[in-house]
Amino acid sequence: MILKKREFGYAGKLGVSRQPAKTLVPDSRKEGFIMATVFMKWLEKSPKDYDRGINILTLGQIQRVKNGIVDVYVRPGIRVLEIGCGTGTLTVMMAAKGATVTGIDTSPVMLSESEKKSR
Image (cartoon, rainbow, N blue to C red; front, side, top):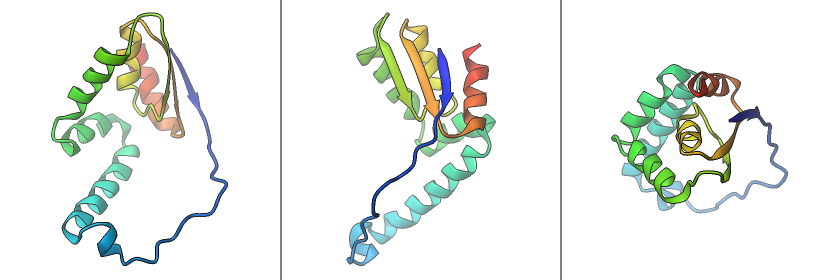
């Protein structure tokens, strides 16, 4: 398993909508979205708590999704590039099934946590 840090720039103009925000995201969902975003940013600074926090945030569904990805798409011998590998949970699962996996992320602390899992 190969873990790499990659920096990506954004070359382009950010599109700005002239519509009021409430037409883009309903008010009741906007607060939840903002809270989830803040929670995610906090978790990224605390990689040891990241997996547990994501499990809470997704109401326990994240593991089912990862298992589905591995069961349906991963076969021994295939090569996989996981962009945004985070703490490496899915990366390790795919490697355990026999795939050659390269995980990349922009966060050195998340990559450090993924390297611990890969040992």
